[in-house]
Length: 314
Image: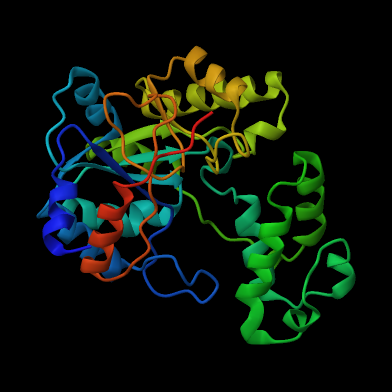
């Protein structure tokens, strides 16, 4: 794709791009090698600031509904509620006068840790025995080589991610026993409030970040509604945006989840299905894109290429 075509794509009217971030680290972490660090994130934000009209999700969707979305509209989103969203990403956003939307799973606020992070931190601090993972297809060489810890953790995560909720929880509780692996990774209530004070948007992301498609209807509605209520109490205002955990249609969320989001009073919801939004987009299945190229030009070409994607929907 040429540079000319790149900017032609990015200038299509009434098209909305949405970026997904999770963490932004202060320095490189070998256990999270593809997670951007502060300098890379600032490069992205500097490039975005000079080329896009950056909005919160609520602002963008309101304009999309009205047919008044400006060219090169873009939303920056963060999933889960990591502490570095406040300590590392927020200062960069404020420096460049950019707004973002933060989707938060309420069970982990203050000192909680998500199941995937528990596994990553457990593998980081100790050796893993083969018998602990007998029911998984794990390359045994990963258990003895110190420099393969990230690959080992990734292999475990991939294989247990879509286990039935109770089975996955039981495995994580058995496996994650080291006190050395416990650390604060998520934002506090005060940090969440400070995001709002700085003009950022808070959105819902369920209580415990489950695979909603694996739950029965009652539990889906509970996860969605209780999360909304808790977050609204924390920030003392209504929230209108939601992100489905993991976010792939059918595999991660289903029609019951969409109905729960609507019934809970949300006005829009985002997925992790790539693509851009336009006037015909289902506003309860809005596509998003995860940027991973480090260089600004590579980042830009990826973003333009995303305009060619057609999101998957239920």
